[in-house]
Amino acid sequence: MVAASAPGKLILFGEHAVVFGEPALSMAIDLRTEVFARPHTEWLADGSSLKDEKYRYVRRAVEMAWKGGPLWLEIRSMIPLGCGLGSSAAVTVATLGVATGLQGGSVQPEVIARNAFDIEHGVQGRASPIDTSTATHGSAILVLKEARDGLLWKMEKGDRHWFIHHRDLPPIRLVIGNTGIAAATGPLVEGVKRRVEEDDRAAAAIAEIGEIALEGLRALGAKDFVRTGELMNRNHDLLNLLGVGHPLLDKFVTAARPYSYGAKLTGAGGGGSMVSLTDDPDRVRAAIEEVGGRAFIVETEPRGLEVRA
Ligand code: MEV
Image (cartoon, rainbow, N blue to C red; front, side):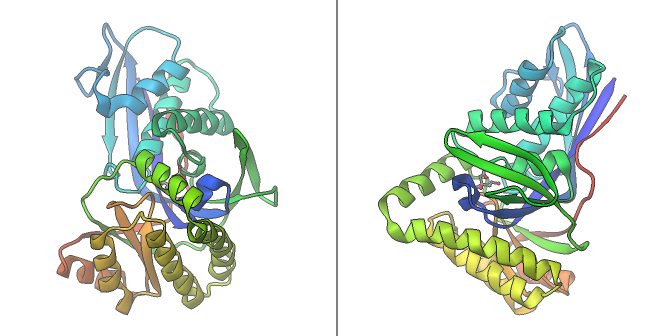
């Protein structure tokens, strides 16, 4: 049997704008998805059919990377599904890792990240490589329009391209508030595209989010959490302007802010999750729970994809 695991992610700055090629900053979090695989007489995922829609990322990953007969796959995940924390990227990357490991191949992160991006792009219809690169590499990922120090790889789709960089961030604990509403990323991404085509203010918001991501990285690197928090708050307002907010996210953000440097939705939105940067994670978690949210504390995760026989 071979097992592979990959982390979830949290976007600190730049979701949605990154799909247009703008800069963005994400970090891997200490919630992981693990996939186990062994050859078997029929295809099974958690004892059920791999044809079930909930296994579409797993199915596409084995179709792409596995050349042998049927497999018995077991998937264990600590990442809440469809909540902006990278559950689909993590299961895709871990499945590609397990298929590579089972065939005795050497795991090349760039190849895995590229294949995982192709799969996510295919399922969502439109995507950036930020989630799949973070699940593959771990640590923190900075997406830029050009190559800088720490370049990992470049990805392209049509006329868009992304330079993916490794960044060291100080270890941080962040609070996640989960609405419990799983919103599909594809339609949200498509909705933003339409809005940008029709409304100049939305196009300007995309550009401003890109600038915020760069300034946010500088502020975080200088441990200037006050400025980082202000930028998170502004990023949240701009995401609302792009139409990917949700009343529950605003409610949790409002509850968290008195005890936070900043708070914003994270990931695709439309439900999903928000994140708070704070010195007092327990207080913020309680504040979100007091208004009816599910909250938990996560930490930065240095480990990306790991495969073991
Ligand atoms: C989703 O985690 C992040 C989005 O920017 C989509 C993407 O980058 O593919 C909303």
